[in-house]
Image (cartoon, rainbow, N blue to C red; front, side, top):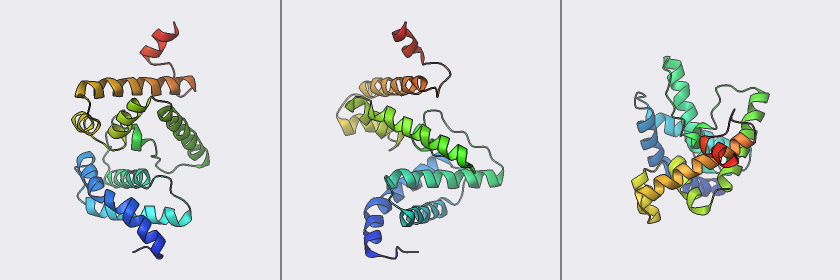
Length: 187
């Protein structure tokens, strides 16, 4: 189903369609047992277009990947397979809900706002590394090459960013206790 108006078609071609190959590769790596990755990509495209029709889309890529992940998880649920999601995949996994009610949706939106606030509060280099790792899905080596820094610096910046985000969450009551580094600094 192509976009109805030329403006939406231009937006789709520039903001959504270029992510198709990366989305397909990401689905293959995260959900290798699914056989219909092309169908998931197409359905994710359709969901992004429907959302665009309802209103502005702040991040087409984030919405696209979240939609694809939700579709893949739904497919796994239908097959009776429980997926394993790494804790560090907070980038896209934070937008997952099976069938949320109003309270769960509101809670999710608040948590997403706090996550956004936490990432924005990171120092620039640290934020770049966290975003490239968790939103773009790049490896440490790919991030190092893209930013012109060492792989070790990538690892240090990533750990620093995750510690700071965890401390941010703990300060807002989203974690039961602060991360170890935050405990030491507050003592």
